[in-house]
Length: 218
Image (cartoon, rainbow, N blue to C red; front, side, top):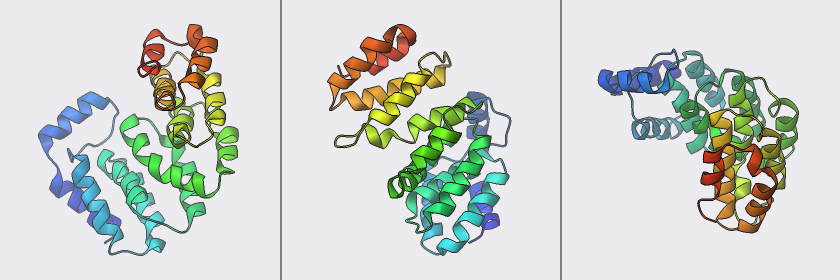
């Protein structure tokens, strides 16, 4: 099954009413088909059960270039459900398309594929610090937190992501503040003391809603 066949199936799943609603919600100028995420996930699972890994990146590149919302979500789902060997090629692809991130509903579906690449080779955190953290596109900066949420889990070292978050506290953008709060809230589930320390130092520089969300489990 190639990219063209996947696109045909996406269009077959499409619902014009849903497409209009999603377009109004996201307010990003691109094509929307009105396909729901469970349907996209089903399509991704069918693909990786029949196709080899060598076709994966090429298929993802072709889907991404369409700029169809659901096709870009499908890229994330393909990287999520497939256990791939060539993490370097996947990371190179993610690093390339980061320049075009412009909506959370697409960017966040890339998180699991990115996490897998990082856990295989944590030097990719150095790459993010060099080439993502100060990027002019705030969606790329936000990805530094969203794609490292795994480090907010128990037994992982949260300090690098917290340091990155500390460099973003003065960014007044809603999505950046939301990402900081999301990271802190996840960490607070098992390490409330560290979240208290962060908020004690930076709460006056964060937006009120972000401090409230970060404190949800404290």
